[in-house]
Image (cartoon, rainbow, N blue to C red; front, side):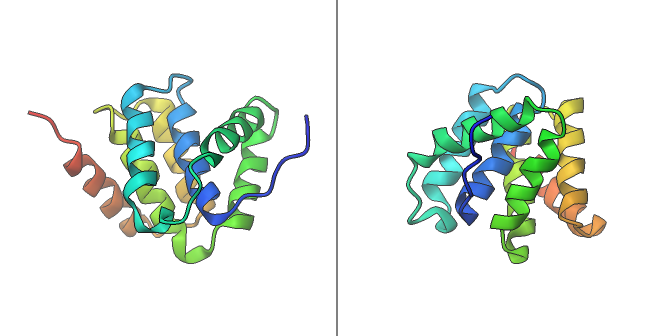
Length: 139
């Protein structure tokens, strides 16, 4: 594989969201719309060059295709993301996972991996997850 680019903190947030969407090997339109909406509206992305989305997506897909690629991806993300943004990244991941109205087994496992990787307090993680469920509830 070619050299893996380093990630900015914003790239790392995008990588987390893409990894959750790609976890079930079926990236849904609702998930892509959610990622785009987050990037276009959240203050943390105010100065982000959205042209980076494609590069970050390619990096995530390339890594997920490799043996031990998830570990490498998490290493890149941890190197780029300040600890104070771990809960932010998890909240964004939960929003992407919930965007299509269902969190499948692979997406749920990826969220668990992210929780573990960021060593999030279980109570805080549960509150973030519940907030995502509440935001994406349908009649």
